[in-house]
Amino acid sequence: MKRVSYRYLAFSSLAALKKVFADSDIKLLDILFWVKMAVNSVVAKTLTGKPPTGSYLATFTNVPVIYNNKDNGSLLFRKKYLSLPANIFDLPLDNAIDWMNFRNPSFIPNCGCKEHFTFQRSTLVQIKLMYDTAFEKPGIEDNFYFVRVNDLLYLFGIEDVQVKAVDMAIRTSVSPYISSMTLDDEVMLNDEQVLDVISKVVSIGRYVMMVPKERVEDGTDTTATPPGRVIQPEQTAGIGQ
Image (cartoon, rainbow, N blue to C red):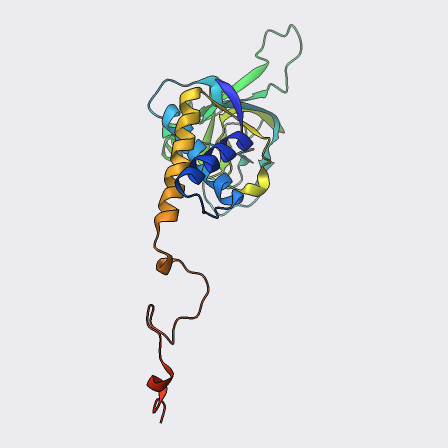
């Protein structure tokens, strides 16, 4: 694996497109957007259905835990939760979240107790069943769980534990927004993936450039005149009379 800059991916893709469409007017911002989509596609294909790899793993410390004091009877309310600190891949069973733990607030050196506790992934259905069974209730025997709901992670079993922050490792995806990057930002790719990303971007560019111009919306008002037809002055005589 090596670090490759978006500058290299973008300008390599643009150079390849110029060889096919020499007079093309493709904007660099378009290329960068396509590059980011291609990177996500290539990396997701690598992660899905294969043993986990640490190549795309990012760690975050002191991610703040929030307490929701609203209560409408839902299992999610009056619970502690956190927001994902970055975009993650939508992998099966939420495997994009590699691990998440918190420091034992009662820990002191040589106490013979655990310094950190780890959250286990679960689902709302499983959590409800656990709460309905007293001996399996989250928090008993140091069993702590998280449930992902979109970009929020709800934490169960720490209702009576003073947890202000957690540490976690997640497999991050690339944000599609151009404003959140610079050309010199880097991404981890191997040589084969670099070629795959550039090939995907070139394929997108070729598709865009092959769209017939009459189908491209350029803002011109064509409601009065059908495409391809020119109304001669003598043809307008009598119209509207």
